[in-house]
Image (cartoon, rainbow over all chains, first blue to last red; front, side, top):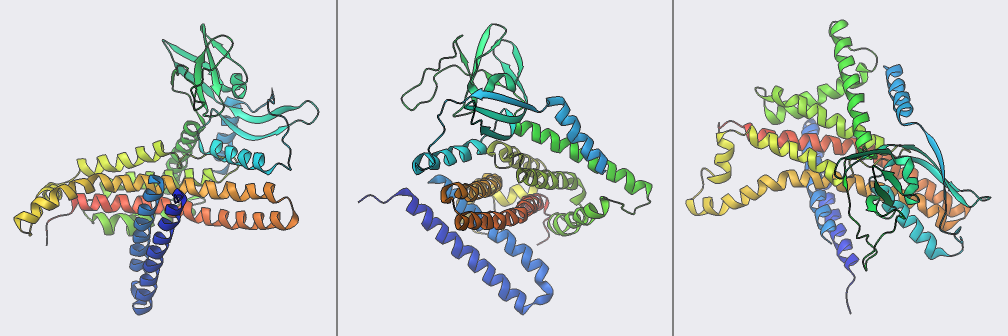
Length: 63
Length: 364
């Protein structure tokens, strides 16, 4: 049986979801530990989330 | 400032003139019970929206009495180069229903790919097996929807920020009116994006680019959420140009230590230096490439999701489905406003980061 291409799209989205989720988890925990540094942590988390997302989009467009 | 904005929109409308045009509708009015045709129609509508177009279409409907399709739109000028320039307004094309004669040549719009082809007098397309026209295409320099939107945003930004600068100087450094909204944003870009990433010494050279790119992307993203239906930042050519600017500025202002880190990474064994050089060189191109894909894909995906959710209303045809569709579309619209700002921020932030790599001093 041939697997439809869209299954790959689902897998990509699962991967990106896990990646952004872990980024957010790390950022939240870091803010919890160091509330003073929340500004810096937010910026870094946003950039990392954007990078993960970029990989996901690149994979989706390669489908 | 408010009057200024209004007058720009009015001038824009006056130049191009809002027209209501009617064209015969080839497709019979579709049977709403046939779901397959409705779904393909919605799909076609979405793909058509995502592409560039030769006019600002505001709305269209099929007149029940005459069976003709009525369009309300702002036509834009078409400029073609085909052994000399050809000018005419896009309203003459009648959405591909009519052949336009210009200096002895005949042109017709193909509705399916929104491109203008050179045809004979009758306007016949020669199709290949995939239903793509084989006709010759003239070089198209038209002021299309995207080009007009970019010009509009450029004029708006020029007037807005030169006006703000003047009022700022006149009031001895206190912002007034719209400036009270824009001043914190500009200061945020300087203090939180430019200075920490590029450094106290050199950030001033890059501020003009960072501010321009931030407001350009933000305004165009927001314009894409208005009913005008422009999809400028969701066009890969536009994001490619923006990323190309970042790429050029990064590499042309880069100092010796930047190139040193790429071709001959200091502080690691020679063997690893040789392995790292091609990877780092690839990174030079991947960085702006990820910028262009990120912006393009985010905006494109947002538009597709929003249109699909609104399209659900026509598939469900019921109180429950329509309210669900409305609720979801409303929710996604709010998210899209956030995404519009976030993508502009990320683009500026990453550009600043790359400029920072390029000018970093060797102090470690």
